Image (cartoon, rainbow, N blue to C red):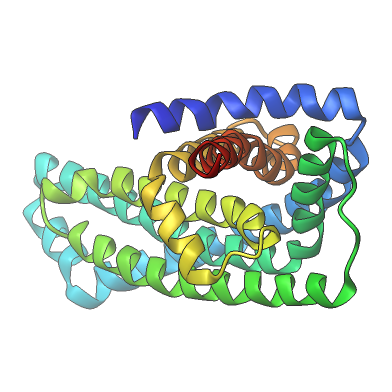
Length: 262
């Protein structure tokens, strides 16, 4: 898995060179600006919602009033630390929902980018088929809904774990790994759908190559620490990097098939 994570991370550097050489900037900037605007708007409202939710829990349970009467600095620190972790988890939960919404909206662009990347690599054009394109978009939406439901179940479990002292301190890390895996899954699936793989086959492939999905998602989230520029570049870089990381595996499978039948 570690090897695949490294391959997936290195694919982002290859994606940057690929975009420069093939002048794909218009396919990066336009959807990137849309993503940035949605991201800023969504995170603002999500932040307010997370703050209100934590305040409601603290007041409803009487925990805040109890701590105020004790006036214990250490317990106050633990409460502050715990609420911070819970806020991070809630933001990751909100972001996961936002992420799938954007994946559904941007599905046509991302599907095209993945196809364009492989067409350039193989130096050939894939004929456009409107019916197949629509089927691919519907399939991508169905898989996104499926992944969002499973991820929501896991994230809610992690949020409950965050309420347990000491154990809860590690939950943001678990949530981030989960987020990275499912986002990378979506990016890899664009290549799967183009090669007529069923949803089951796509799930099986990603399960067998978790490192590729995780590495792709990790770098995608790291992009968000670079304001504006990172937010614009993150989604399109992710799909191109995913396509580049999966292509050697496709080539290897073809060579093995030729050797086996030859």
